[in-house]
Length: 326
Image (cartoon, rainbow, N blue to C red; front, top):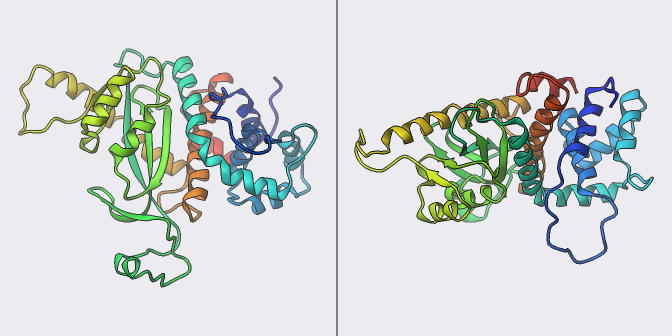
């Protein structure tokens, strides 16, 4: 394939190389004219060019320059370009498809990139804080049903952690390969007050076939989650209760896995938010628009890894400048 001079065009084309997830349950109503893959290409453009609504996307695609002229044919199917209303509806519906699409591509990347090397085939789970834009809806106002300012995102929630303190917004739940290469293999986004162990079973649904251990902190210490891991053929490893130091036979084995976890998921969370500039807050309000962009960003990160692999570039290196160059 001839490499296009525009990085963004190359990344959008790369979406066609990503594996399609298993077909969802049949939906009622008229069959869709445009595929979810086409809508995913549009989200790649939105994230790279930092346009976050269907209206802004169409305004960008209405410009008369060489980049847009190269992009528009990639957003057509059956010789047709979606209408404004179609873009609005399909972008609103795409968040429901992201976990399946991320899982399928994550499994493929884990199979071809072999991220563990000689390390144990482990996947690390964790959640990271994302603050919503606008104001904060404090408890006293929420309990009274009063919204004191129109900038407040009423769909977000409060949570607290030892690192971030109190924050108002969302949680991004991630599962990342704990090896020499960090590959996100599953993702979900919820309001901030959702428990990690409640969301964790969803992160197991599309696990890489070769993954053997799932690593979590104390928030994942849950008998139901332990059983869910056993049901899919993997083992849940979390810190053990009781006074330190532990003296059981598996203490060194668990310590090595916890070291793998601390050197993967926590650095990846920081890198991911730095790549997209979301250390302060996400750029949109509402659960569905936020899921569209944040889970879409996880997919774009995977697309960049796939692009680097297929073009013999250092995989996992220089992701931020590559996306910014697009």
